Image 1 (cartoon, each protein chain N blue to C red):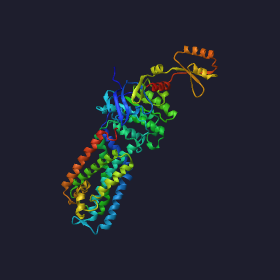
Image 2: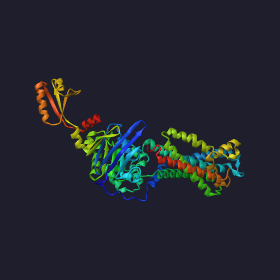
Image 3: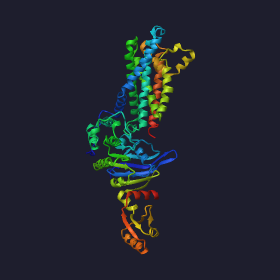
Image 4: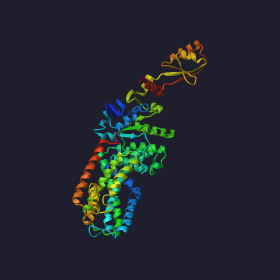
Amino acid sequence: MSLPAIRVSALTKRYGGLQALAGVDLEIRQGEFFGLLGPNGAGKTTLISALAGLVRPDGGRLEVMGHDVVADYRQARRALGVVPQELVFDPFFSVRELLRIQAGYFGLRADAWIDEILEGLGLTAKANVNMRALSGGMKRRVLVAQALVHRPPVIVLDEPTAGVDVELRQGLWQFVRKLNEAGHTIVLTTHYLEEAETLCGRIAMLKSGRVVALDTTANLLERFATHTLHTRLAQPQIGVALGGRADEDGWVDFAFDQFAEVEVLLARLREAGAGLQEMRLGEPDLERVFVEVMQRA
Amino acid sequence: MPELLPPPRESALTGFRTLLHKEVLRFWKVGFQTVLAPVLNAMLFLLIFSHVLDRHVTVYGEVSYGSFLVPGLVMMSLLQNAFANSSSSLIQSKITGNIIFMLLPPLSYREFYAAYVLASVLRGLLVGVGVLLVAWPLVDLPFVHPLWILVFALLGGAILGSLGVIAGIWADKFDQLAGFQNFLILPLTMLSGVFYSIHSLPALWQRISHANPFFYMIDGFRYGFFGHSDVSPWLSLAVVGVSFVLLTALTLALLARGYKLRT
């Protein structure tokens, strides 16, 4: 079995009274598109920062492509590209200068590769423009380019689409997907759960510094999420009495696992005289899984 | 489109050299503010003080006040700009958040230190040479011991570059950095004998001046020009050398711990 791209063992980190990471164990395989989800303050960014050497853990171990991030930090950092959450940039330089400098920090001269990244991210026309003159979306692309400049096998994107318009978001995912198809391991944190559902093959959910769910996206959807029958009833109270849940918009929702249950449910509503006026089926989605996992944890 | 190929070939351009190059580019791109303005400041000091005092004061017997003043101004400009370079670069990077781009790559804390301090020394030297070139036609400068001049310039620049690294990583706000600069660096440089020989001071102030390490930087540097100084250049070299070693050790220890950089 090949080396994991990322291995996290019993990782702990405390900031004063706050236990940011409370013993995280995680293994991400090479070539995976992996999602790291959790509410604000769950420990996602602390975990990524520890991986990148920006945060010093109190206990446990972290490896990137088999290299310990503390003892063998040079190799670990060479193997990792991080797109930070904040829109940060150096105002003294143009896009190309910045990328050359970033490559140089890794001991590399990578002009041809820089041209490729610029093209792939639609930045060629902006190559010689100063960072200050770029729009927010363009600055975000440069952040991605900076993370890729040393061609790392493992790429971590920390909420890369926060506040980004739809066009850029789609372009970015297209690019990142191609990187993944080419063999790069991608680790993504995002609050847009539909993005994670579409892109990630496997997902870990964090809450209060612990991994509370870890599985393939398909398994999580199957294990946690139930289908929903949304109904609008003339007598909603009858629906509630039969186990439905009324929402604020006047719909009564029934959760079910097997479609055969729908038949029985409809028959019971008719017998009780609930007066079915409208209905639709809801597919399981990651948002429901997320809410359920967070409630259970 | 990108493919997972072996990483690009590593060139002789190491991380350290890149960081040094970037730090030099950073001040060079705003050279008007970082090099020319300090030269102009020093020239104003020279014109005003030498105009007022040149005919009334001589130092070390026969040295005119203007000549005496120039090495002090050169060294003061060098020291202040060496400090300004590393401290302002670091605090700007911290406040804007782009320091992350220096922390993510495989740069060691020693490379980090060396690049910031060397860039500071280079800016200090550039400003110092600028002041010297502009002042040269106006005064008589004998350059008796050029090697002493060079040694004190390098050590002084490196000490202030290190202090700038400490201040830059310690300060969380520009205000704190300005405090460091205005309440520590500026008084210590201004009261170090730039404008006077400490022999002209009352005994108490002479003793206080001897406790100021900046005094030894200026005095040793001036010895290189005139072959005269207030204290032995060897004593100055010892004080400045020990200061450099201690500050380097302190800065490296802070960087190794990741003080305020890696939490």
